[in-house]
Length: 364
Image: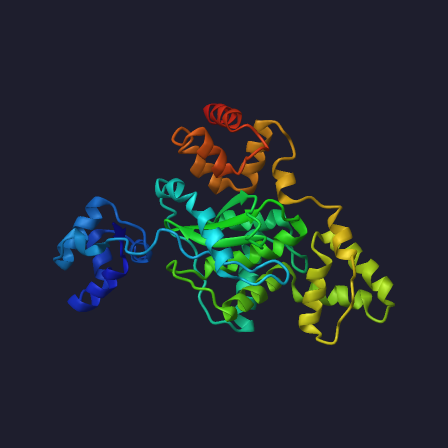
């Protein structure tokens, strides 16, 4: 059964009982009342009080979950790849592997939702909010560590997996049993990952009810908001001023220096300059690919050590919410399923990881 807090507002209007009076009668704050309306389930005595005030049974506030426990995966494809049914189907198969994990996971509780249209001002406002949440220094690009921190602060779970060949993307977003989840392709270089994570984060914070559908206009908005979150105008302008009026080769070298220093792709900053100055059309050749050789894929960071304890700590740092959810069910799955959840495959022995995980929990 699913709690439907919005029915409190419906009853308030139908019965002519102001919400402020309901809160006073139940001896709770107006904020607590808002939390119930937005999805937090009140404790038993308060639920009984609501039923008494509005003269309804508890069943009125609950409904059968009629929708799929997993929403349709949403993601921006990699490069020129086109989203198709096969890609969507494979992403859904991957997400379904975690249905059991999230079915028995603690409720995600209240999660932030950012409303608004798809215009540039909404994108700028959202971008500034996201940067403020994790304290990105004004004028500096967001790095991958801040991006992961942002997910945790927004109550978004990230899961690392090697994507099947048909899922041509760096990451994708979906809901699983009301939990907002971003799957991350472990083969993705961290320079490519930042924008992809921010794109999916925008999907997540605009998803109010888990029924978001793929729309090209929304994908474009997510791109715009993600770009503004990663790169502020002042930084883009600074980089452009450093390269303008210089020969192409020198421009590429300067861009490579900025990109290496601030941990973003050359292609990404060029795209941002072009979005603000359509006449900018620098050919960067293989410079972007060459720069990425100096940076790791996210899977290489995660599995940098072959010691199970080190892997667990890396996972906990990058995805604390996923770590907590798995920790609470550490003894439930088979060894095979446990390894599948973690995407261990041949990287580490699942049983050894689980043993080390238990030891960590015992001593924490």
